[in-house]
Image 1 (cartoon, protein in one colour):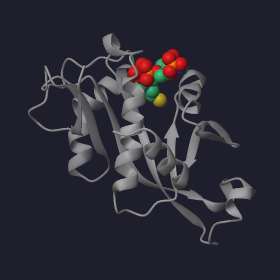
Image 2 (tube, rainbow, N blue to C red):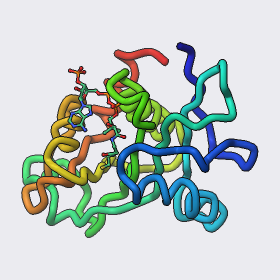
Image 3 (tube, rainbow, N blue to C red):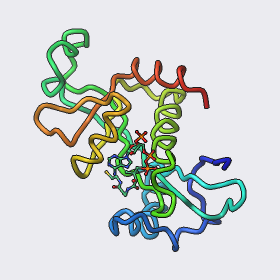
Image 4 (spheres, rainbow, N blue to C red):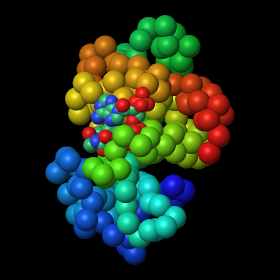
Amino acid sequence: MKLLFGLLSPAMEKSGFACGEAALDTYLQKLASQDMKRGFATVIVARTETDPKKIIGYYTLSAASVLLDNVPEEMARNMPRYPNIPAVRLGRLAVASGMQGQHIGSLLVLDALRRSCLNELAWALFLVDAKNERVAAFYEKFLFQRFADNTLHLWMHRKQAENLITQIPA
Ligand SMILES: CC(C)(COP(=O)(O)OP(=O)(O)OC[C@H]1O[C@@H](n2cnc3c(N)ncnc32)[C@H](O)[C@@H]1OP(=O)(O)O)[C@@H](O)C(=O)NCCC(=O)NCCS
């Protein structure tokens, strides 16, 4: 199954998307396009080559920042003393129910890392939010690490992301 990844566009079918989490379905159907227009999120969708109108998964990316005080001391030691660390946040991630467990979610995460690394925007940390422990465990497979003060928020250093995408070609 050849997958296509690209920006959400009006010609695509959003209405039938269902991932098992109503909030993530509603977001794609009602808010995603608005967020793109207003500069609050970039929405990237996955489709198959055989049915390119149908969305089978999506994620969102936004600029973010993390307080220097909130990162582990060993990492902060190697960073400039600015109060905030520039970051990218993968805020939402969803795969259509019938397509889950086929590594599409993993490919979406890798696509997000790849796009973020190839973009000229400067960032040092890649952030992900997990809604529960099972999703946090899914992110740990990529070696994301948990913040000590909120273990459902995880981070990866830019260098790690760059290494990961060179090991796994597109
Ligand atoms: C979470 C989600 C995006 C994962 O996508 P997916 O395509 O099903 O995941 P993958 O097939 O890439 O899974 C990769 C690995 O993570 C595991 N995994 C998949 N979904 C998982 C989940 N919800 N929790 C924990 N582990 C999970 C798989 O077992 C797989 O392990 P393996 O590589 O050892 O076989 C998808 O299940 C989903 O959309 N769920 C509903 C919405 C949701 O919870 N989104 C996250 C919001 S924070």
